[in-house]
Image (cartoon, rainbow, N blue to C red; front, side):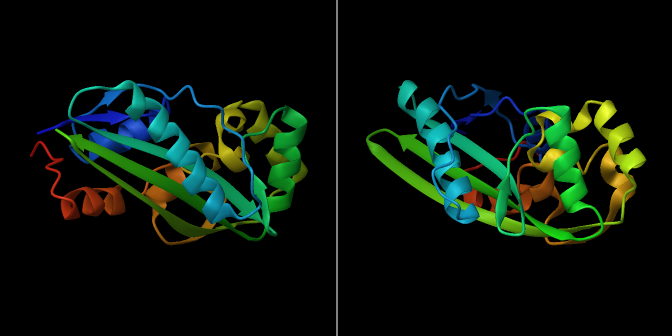
Length: 195
């Protein structure tokens, strides 16, 4: 089995890979994460590619590197991580009581001897929030949970009480479409399970 590297410091992505029984090491990407497009598919695929290639190019051994990036999209606008409590409140006010989409881009780069392969894909999940009062939004933001998450919420955390409906892959909203990743690894002949 080739060494698998996750090019992300995200604890949620680590937990998902562990849940899937995929052995890996973490080497966080140092790539500059700048979104250069308003198209969410292109944005997440580009950022996942940047993160993945940053770590891949620094490795010399036979390796599989996985890079991922997640954004929330509401009314066609890409929402990244909030830069302040005020911005988090504003994002949540815009999401409450309605639907939005979550996109995660994933890039897999593999080196085996002189052979190199690259695969980039994305998943999209629709999420619907129940209506939230301003007091509920402020209380949630005060927990600090939203501050390092795209769209200012973590579906696997305290905001779960506000989620009305999910259409698509739940894990995609957490930050990594685990089942699709496993299928992509399997389809390219990469043995990625310990059990």
